[in-house]
Each structure stands twice: as structure tokens, then as C-alpha cells.
Amino acid sequence: TALLDIRGLKAEIDGRQILNGLDLTVNKGEIHAIMGPNGAGKSTLSYVLSGKPGYEITGGEVSFNGEDLLAMDPDERAAQGLFLAFQYPLEIPGVATLTFLRTALNAQRKKRGEDELSSPDVLKRVRDLAKQLSIEPEMLKRPLNVGFSGGEKKRNETLQMALLEPKLCVLDETDSGLDIDALRVVADGVNRLRAADRSMIVITHYQRLLDYIVPDVVHVLSAGRIVKTGGKELALELEATGYAQYQSEAA
Ligand code: ADP
Ligand code: MG
Ligand code: MG
Image (tube, rainbow, N blue to C red; front, side, top):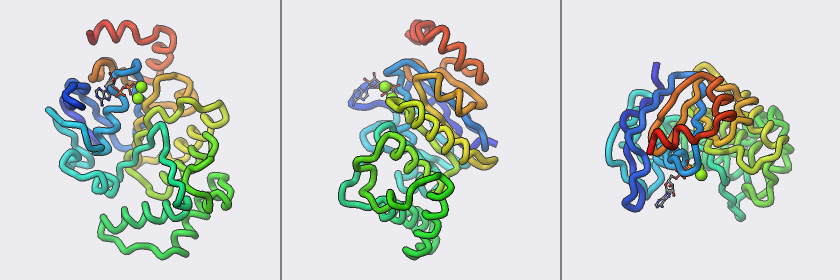
């Protein structure tokens, strides 16, 4: 059954239309890759799904778990199980990583009408997950992402994902600028979180991440629409041919 169903989505920013009637259906438990040339609208799609202010929806529908996603505020989207990982994770100098994780978890629980967890309860959950992900407990005391290496930021993001137990994870070019070790960290984290009731959308310009995270479905996004859909072999084909044919088709 469809977890995410996007129909004819059109969106603008600053009066410029970026998404031009985008259709995408992601079923429960599936991993989809979205590839495409620079400027195609990949990040715009992830921002629109997150509810980031400044984007105007000018057409189409998005249903998430059978509900109207576009009618929800960003916190409500997170509470319903949507998790977005962006290319440049937020750095918060004054806030310890553990404090940030506790705040995020309790905000989600509160929005769902669940009791907040006590600090010791959160600490226990976070410590258990950190251990599974080979994260040093010391890192939890450091200010969020400040001075973290690329790999540490990605580990931390995986920890956040594991703690919040999302139904849909959207990773936007989470691989760009990472060395091969950090890339493996991202892939390990994502693969560890694969589950029958969890779907993922992995947005990437390059094929190499998909050697480690093997998608069920691959899409090409060009000029604000999905212009081709295939199996995992489509990623390899794109690596060989590039995006030029899709750019001219879209133009
Ligand atoms: P991708 O992630 O696929 O590289 P983006 O979604 O970041 O593409 O950008 C899609 C297009 O939207 C690009 O042409 C970009 O220049 C344009 N764009 C992004 N932000 C703005 C903005 N604030 N105002 C106008 N155009 C924008
Ligand atoms: Mg880009
Ligand atoms: Mg982008």
C-alpha cells in the first residue's frame, strides 16, 4: 500500500515554478532513489515535503499514510513519521547533542499526545542506540554537529533517525562531499534502519551511494518532473550515459 502518494505536484519559490506536475508513489518498506541533474528540483521536492516556509504549492496533492500532508504544519509531519536529512546538518553551538535528541523526541511524543520521557529514560534509549551505531558516548555531550567530522555528523543523523523511528526517511544528497568511509557510515545507517514498515527516498546526483544502499526503484527527476522510472539497473545506466538525454527531453 502507498505510504506516500504525490500527484501532479507543482510548486514555486520567489515566483519561479520549480516543480512541474511531479508524480511519485512510494509503498511501505520500499527504498526509492531519485537522481537527476543539478537544478532539477530534487532539493525543492524535499523542502516541499518538509513544509519549509517560502514554497508555494500551486497544484497537486500529497497523501502521507492516507492523510493530506500539505495541510499539516512541519511539526505535525514529523509527528506523523516523516524524517528529512539535509545535505548540511544544523550546527547548534549552545546545545548538547543529547539535549537536542531529547527535545526532538519529546516534541514528537507531545505532538502525538504521548507522555514525555524522563531524562534518564531518554539517556538509556540514546545510549543503547549509540552503542549499536558505534558512537562514542562522549559525542553526546558535545554541542550538536559543532566541529563534527563528516562521518560523525552522519552517524549522529542516523542516531536521530533511529531514535525517532520514522515511517519515511528522505535523504537529500546526504552523500555529497563525503569520503568513502563517511559514505559507508551513511549506507550502514540507512541499511540498518531498513524495515518492512519504513520507506526511504534517497536523493543523489551520483550513483556510488547506490552501490551500498541498493534501491528497489530508481527515478530520474528533470525540470521538476519524474521523467523516467526503473529498477536499480537504471542508476548504472545513468552513470554511463549521464543526464543529457533527459535534460533535452524535459526542455
Ligand atoms: P537540485 O536539488 O535538483 O539541484 P534545487 O531544487 O536546489 O535543484 O533547485 C531547482 C531550481 O530552483 C534551480 O534552478 C534553482 O536555481 C532554483 N531555485 C532554488 N531556490 C530558488 C529561489 N529561492 N529563487 C529562485 N529560484 C530558486
Ligand atoms: Mg543542487
Ligand atoms: Mg539539491
